[in-house]
Every structure is written in structure tokens, then in C-alpha cells.
Image (tube, rainbow, N blue to C red):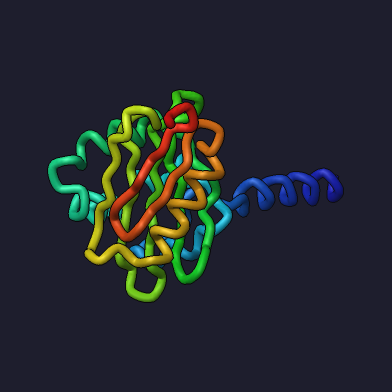
Length: 169
């Protein structure tokens, strides 16, 4: 009987101590650093009361379209690179529709790159304070060439992206 009680208590304790998908209350975008290595599509961060107003602020009239994009997208794990958090929120297997959300850890500033079309249609935008940090541009260029290098070559300078399709001469 004592062994059964111990086993029951251990099981209940294990179930109640499991990490919750979004257990940390965010007070600012800088708090997202606590989620490095997690997936924002599955932990609730893409619906967070701190992140969404920041996105609304930088996206302006494109906010609703971006929210629709988010609903159709998958996510990579949140990464920390060169003082920035990187969230890849992109549609898979559709020839484009890629986005990267950046949070500057130092001050919580939010930047976004969004390829709103297929690579071939070349419809993209940068959002956030200007000038876009060089590190953001470099990461966007690297990520696009890694993901879409079989389709095009990307060259990013500031907030301008040159897309040269591989079959173009």
C-alpha cells in the first residue's frame, strides 16, 4: 500500500511539473531571449501580447496580411546570433513566402524581413527602424541563399534585396 501511494504521488508530481508551452510572462520583447531553442509556432509566442503589438507597430497596413502569413507558416527554433534573436516564420514547399523576425536583445527593437511572394515574383519588404542593422541584412542574405540558393542568388544591402534568378542571364 505504501509503495502504491509513493508511485501515485510520483506520477502526479511528474505531470504537474512538466514545462508549460508558454510559462514565462513576457514584459518586453527582450524577454524572448528566454525562449532560445524553442519553436514560436508551438509555444504560443506568435500570439503573445508583447510580440503582436510590436509587429503591428512596424508592419502598419501590412499587419493583417502578415498575421495571415503566420497562420499558414511553420517555424524554426528561435536562435540567438550576434546580439539578435531570429525567428524563421515561413511557409514550406511553396517557392517563397519566407519571413524572419529579429529582436535586438540590447533594446528589444523589432525588425522583420518578409518575402511576400514566390522567389520569382520578387515581392519583399523590410520593416522596423531605419537604418536596418547590417547584421540583420547579413543574416537575411545568408538565410535566403541557404534556403533558396537552388532558385536564385540574393544580395542584401541595407534594406534593399537584389534577387537574381538562376535561370536568368
